[in-house]
Amino acid sequence: MAMASDGLRRVAVFGATGSIGTSALDVIARHPARLRASVLAAGRNVDALVTLCVSHRPDHAVIADPQLLDTLAAALHAAGLGTTPHAGMAALDALAADDDACDTVVAAIVGAAGLDSTLAALRAGKRVLLANKESLVLAGELMLQAARAAGATIVPIDSEHNAIHQCLPADGDCSGVARIVLTASGGPFRGRSRDQLADITPTQAVAHPKWSMGPKISVDSATLMNKGLELIEAHHLFGMPADRLDVLVHPQSLVHSFVEFIDGSTLAQLGLPDMRTALAVGLGYPDRIASGVAGLDLLHHGRLDFEAPDTDAFPCLALARAALVAGGTAPALLNAANEVAVSAFLQGRLRFLAIPALVEHVLAALPAADAASLDVLRDADARARGVATQALTTGTFH
Ligand code: NAD
Ligand code: MG
Image 1 (spheres, rainbow, N blue to C red):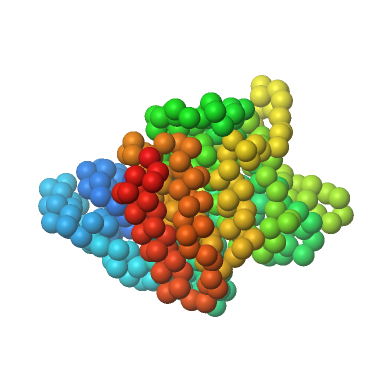
Image 2 (cartoon, protein in one colour):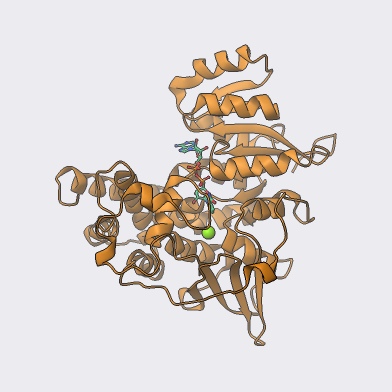
């Protein structure tokens, strides 16, 4: 990995305008002698991207939608910036791989759309701060293989996986681990029965009690699919089989996960629910750097509660666990169906309880096969989107 002559880490932030992206930029701006945002990339919001470029003065700015290149170029020029404009997903892949552009990539695009650029960064041996969990669910094995082959470093940014990363030995050796327990806030509807979930609106679902996040992951947290995706994520990142991965609901969201070792020790990482802590772990890695997040005052917080997840009211967790156990293309099918379902729910075209029903429908329609290659996984992703979209169009689910 090339190092800039000024000793600064040059960080590409993919998904810069999102919740994780802006938190990463907040931490980067606290360390001007150590970190520089060299590439900023967003999906469609040119105005928000240019505003970030004015503050962070990156070398490159990328807008995913190719039709917005001229708009981006004009806005950067009008702002008097020397930032080079780019458009299209291929530009992301090229910049991720370019040693002159960055040595660190914050993978914070939402959904399977983040897979290619994350893979490009891993194949180029970069330090990858991995927030984009859907890419791992879709193609975790291939991503880990690519990272090993190229000597890339993955620092998990999902708070639970970042917590586990902090509890494990520095070399990531899991041979002494008996079990990993992911904590879950339980989302905004914890304690409700299935019947009480019938009329949930998108506004209610995205109002998370503890974390401030983008709309897709907020809905995933409300259905508990987020915790299901995280089981699959943990399986890939830490090489743990499904029967050694558990979930414990912890409404205060202060304990970010547990690692139980074979000698009876359990280690946990605690902190306020603010993603800047996990991002600082990755941005400074292996050093500790300030994140802007205050330490934990347990006298003030008082108590830590734990309970079992309710898989009757929230069947997505069980669906994801079953996909993990089935293996092959099952997690890719699950993820794609869920992306279509959540998007339809956010648009008011699908009821909250129909999210798991639609995912189950897709998994029943498309039996899992061996995930022999990236092409097979991409094909599974596309087919699942097709079946889910078809079911929405025909009104089978609403
Ligand atoms: P968000 O919706 O706030 O931001 C998403 C970002 O991705 C935006 O910058 C958007 O412009 C960009 N984007 C969307 N579609 C794109 C596309 N097709 N091509 C290129 N860019 C695109 O989402 P978020 O909450 O920041 O989450 C980002 C990722 O991090 C998700 O995978 C999520 O599961 C994961 N994550 C988020 C949090 C959190 O606290 N927000 C915690 C853990 C994991
Ligand atoms: Mg998480």
